[in-house]
Length: 196
Image 1: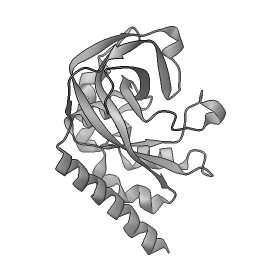
Image 2 (image 1 turned 180 degrees about the vertical axis):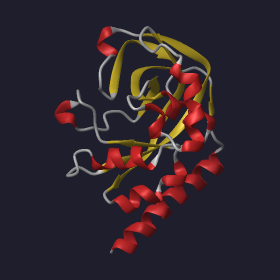
Image 3 (image 1 turned 90 degrees about the vertical axis):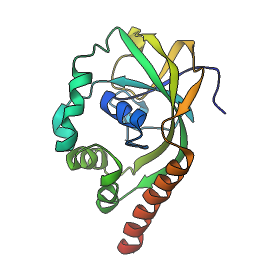
Image 4 (image 1 turned 135 degrees about the vertical axis):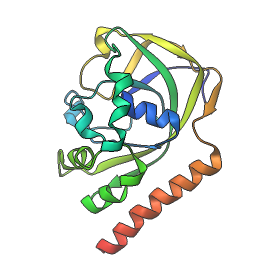
C-alpha cells in the first residue's frame, strides 16, 4: 500500500530516475557507496522516493543511443533543491553473481556495458543486487530542500520531514510490468542454467 506521506529517499542517477519514470526501465543495480556501512549496500526500506542526482562518469556510462538523455539533467542543480517525482516499491531483489547474468540484463536498462560491469566488479566477493521496482509517478512532484546531511556517496537518505506522496499513477500498466518482470527472470534463469 502506498503511504500518504514518506521520508525516505534512495539516491539514483537522474537519467535512471527519468528512465524509470518513462517506463523504459524497472531495475536498479546496487552494491554500495563509499559512505555505506562497510561500503556494502543493504535493502533498508521496501518503499522510497527516488532521489535524483548526478553520477560521476557521465555519458560514457550510458548506451550510445541513450547519451542524449543527459542533456536535461546535466544543467540541473541538485545541491539546493531536488524534485521528488517518483515513488518506488521493491517488487523483488535478485542476486546477480556472474558476468553472463549482467549481460543478459542489457536490454532492460539504459546503461552501457561498462557501467553494468563496473557495478558488478566492484567488491567482487559480494553479489550484485538486482532490484526490481514498481514505480509510481507523483501527480504533484515535491520540491525537497537539500540538507548537508543528505549529501555524499550514500544510498539511503532519511529526510528531516515527511513529504506527501499524494495521488500517483503507475509508470507502466500492471500487465506490462508483470511481463517485464517475467522476462527479466527468464533471461537470468537461462544464463544460470547454461552456467550449470
